[in-house]
Image (cartoon, rainbow, N blue to C red):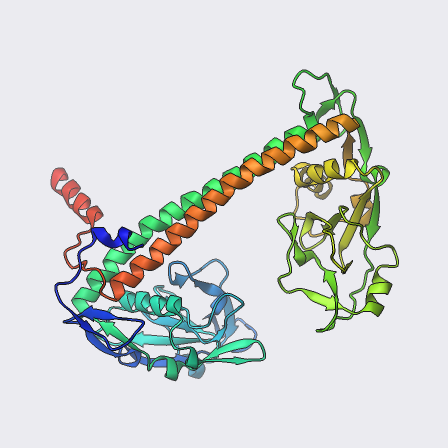
Length: 465
């Protein structure tokens, strides 16, 4: 990132901030505690269930957009708040919202976003509002706080209790930081708004590229598992509307005839912190893999009960029939586990068929089947008999082997492209963070920066007159 910053000028003179992680700052900048930058830090309030009389928008940590430090407006929460509780908590444009409680495995509390909306709102009890002082530019302070958040400053202000992080806002606001004049703050904020927007556009394009790659990936697999690899093969009507024509010599069957379909017990096993048997729930199956986020475990007694119908063998398919519906993954080796509620296991009667069945299920065939049985409406679950009757195709053994190697090659190619795209996104995000850091700590001088869009707009106005 040093080379990337080389195109920007530095300030003529610097002074030592006296803080190791901050280093030198421009000689004319001031250095004081964050507490002087905000007039007041006011804790939020959760209120009661909405009743239609005193309902008010209550902004939560879940509403934080940690990328652009603003509020997500897609799923706002309303609560019943009495006027006396709302009076000192109502947000104004330019107020900052700081996360006081929450955090996670990879994040710490302390994220700050800016409120820039016109509707009345307060913060929840896990969020506090901070009103910038008159000498501060709200957007600049937001960027400054984002730098502090990314740098994980002032660990002593963060308390860990029963797995939840809590921020001592008073202790946090005693942290010192560097501040230029308000005019310079405004210039830096305008520069960062413009430059981060350009980076965000590039990131959005890369994310769209991943979506297109995934769609193409699935389309190629879908064509292979339903039409085969021979473009000249004779076709026949499958008798299944959403499947259309399939190779003439392929068998059209149902899942229950080609695979043993094992349903879970319709109960939840007892969980133990020291349990050694992983309980696979629907939330643990994602992107065709097992993930252990929020993993729960049980003991030997429960394991024996929950595997009375058999332990899912290595290489068989785990299937979620609810919440969400239709996620699949292969059973890995050396894992002691049992199935939780709404999980199913498919064990192909012919071992070689298992690979084809998995590829068939990750194609769009399963989505099309679910859409057909739900008649276009959103389906939250599949009944056992609906799963058993999923239409499947049975190519020859040789074709299955050939298709499997073909699809493996396709997966590898798409995975390489997707990984490169993800790496590009990571680099862009690093660039964004480094640019913010450099600007708010005075490592680059943007006082003479001019918004190119503003110049273009001015030229257009002059031409029109």
